[in-house]
Length: 359
Image 1 (tube, rainbow, N blue to C red):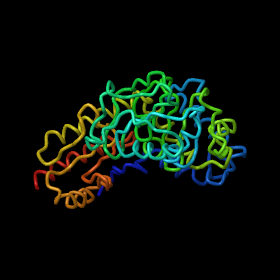
Image 2 (image 1 turned 180 degrees about the vertical axis):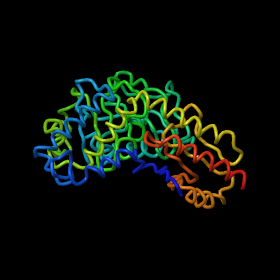
Image 3 (image 1 turned 135 degrees about the vertical axis):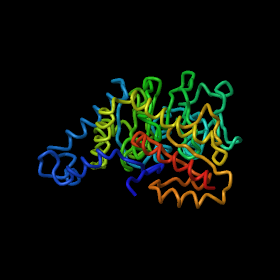
């Protein structure tokens, strides 16, 4: 087996050059005589890593100066509860759009802290599309409008930024952040776990507009208060230092690839080839509305489910791993994030074609 390709939805594939650099610097970071693993976040070296991390992310996403960057723990799942605790601003309700399993979880958790208006839902379709925006019901008195830009499990991705009609727009971008150019100024808050396009599990990025800070509920612990974390540069408690370092290496790699605009073209091309292979097949199919197919997570179903296990085992013999679909939907899923090389997608397509020929 000459090459292994990891199609996991997360933790996911890393750029090989980043892994090699981390290996090289593991025992001695840039002549410091220390591993980043053992550096104090208050010491002489780590602040340099932290400052560069924020600077590179601001540059890659063109983040305006009136936004604070937080690097937190707990994953995007923690933010499902922390967002309503931080930005309700004295209001009692928030609007949510349900387009898959993760936005559904966000609704469930937010209901513990405020009244949730489900402005639109594609649940009746099995989460295979996005409801027409003209049908959305928004409450102009709500604190914000929340949506999930890419549903990792169901493979549904928004093709454009929705119109929040004056409400602060809140977006879970965990599985497609840095995969396409976006206008950050259209959002009140963006959050994302880093374990898909940005680095390892253990860091959650929150990009929050300054005017939304300072409204945490009185019962919110300081470590979960966005304003308190912003004041302390996300170091109110000890941060996940080595994970910050790895995220920083991935951001440098992204810059070397030409930045987000170049990655967008690369990702579009990879996804188009894989969807073309699926659409031209009689064995494989994708259930998602063509207009909202994810470029990051490509689910597909075999016409004969009895072949699922055979497909997965055969794929592994060819170095293609983590293709099993999420347990809630079954089938297959290929996650082709930024770090998935074109060669990996080609290897998968070639295997799929040969598997169909022989089965």
